[in-house]
Amino acid sequence: MMTDLALLTIDRARSAVEERKTTAVALAEAHYTRIEKEDGQIGAFLTLSKERALEQASRIDRIAEQGNPLPPLGGVPVGIKDVMSTRGVRTTAGSKILDKYVPLYDSTAVARMEAAGAVILGKMNCDEFAMGSSNENSGYRPVRNPRDLSRVPGGSSGGSAAAVAADMAVVTLGSDTGGSIRQPASFCGVVGLMATYGRVSRYGLIAFASSLDHIGPLAKTVKDAAIVLGTIAGRDPMDSTSADLPVPDYVAEIGKSVRGLKLGVPKEYFGDGLDGEVRHAVESAIDKLKELGCELVPVSLPHTPYAIPTYYLIATAEASSNLARYDGVRYSHRARGVKTLSEMYRRSRDEGFGAEVKRRIMLGTYALSAGYYDAYYLKAQKVRALLARDFDKAFEKVDAIVTPTSPTAAFRLGEKSNDPLAMYLADIYTVTADLAGIPGISVPCGETNQKLPIGLQILGKHFEEATMLRLAHAYEQSRIQSARV
Ligand code: GLN
Image (cartoon, rainbow, N blue to C red; front, side, top):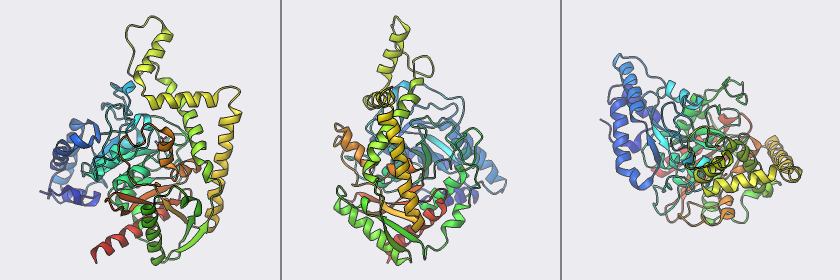
């Protein structure tokens, strides 16, 4: 029986089950034991779905017993961010307003994971409606960084990142609207991948900002992230924004050489506000890619300073509209003892939503209101187009762009929670990719003196995840090799 969960990757877990060295049931149970032991202090899970997990694990074990090959994720224990609908399993989006919501259907990404053999252990804690950068906005409890319990794991997919970092799941799904997969991945020392907008169906994802929301994996290795992307990507008739393009074999692609690839280094991502230790680690990682045969090209993304305000106008505007559906009538929480319909709406929303969600609904409603629409929302959409054009221009000269994932390593709980503007700046290097619709990945590239992980971000052209994954994989492998010598 394999007990070292830290060494488990998708292939190792799957082949151990396939070769009958362990069973999928034993693997799931070993993870639940670990969750029981560790998660009290970390807080990565909101709900465990043991019954569903063990049923699926037995199904996988039966395939293995018959000597048949397992599907790509056969028996692999995974976690799902609680913004994705799971049939029969409570789905809260980290909000009290959905405290008792049990969906009747699976989101497409979840259904595809399960069809590929994954065993869903449970639902991951996150910032309420995925709004946050530290996981302190969860309506339930904050998540703590497994590398240092006094620090945040990043957000909003903090539970998804922490669970992988603490070996409580082999991989997890998270969501990224402004950085929420890549930033927590960098804070927790794992790989976080956001594909091109439209590559992965959003059907069944509880909407925050629909033109920015993405589903993607958090994993221990680039290869695992590639396997999961290959599983969940592709056209879905249930999401009209999902792209009708063939999905490449990402695993075959990552092995190819990176020699001769051109890497853009944007000066705007290495300016004021970037922590010295982070800069050093990221610059060393970029040097490593150069040693591997990549050519470095200075590029400029001149509209970068407008990215944060643009993001917070568009994201809050879309959120205010998406969150109108929580009215106390449908879904979950309804205030008691109210006398009129409008009092019921008001009190249900007041009791159900947390402070950050309310702040965003107010900001978004304001930005969309008659008289301000042109000045704020429309203006933000125009700047969004300029930001996207910056990338288009840069990508005429380069194959990928390399930057830090976040300006700092993980900060302490409470350090920024009373200062929303400081918190918003944690995503300064990630929101641009969401606004432009391009793919991005964060790979671990070092540690601070205090042993806090640092992430290298690689951004790719639209629908060219394969090139980005190849670079991330080549870098990861060279780092593993230099750690060995
Ligand atoms: N931190 C950003 C926000 O609070 C991004 C969140 C996300 O990507 N879901 O909106």
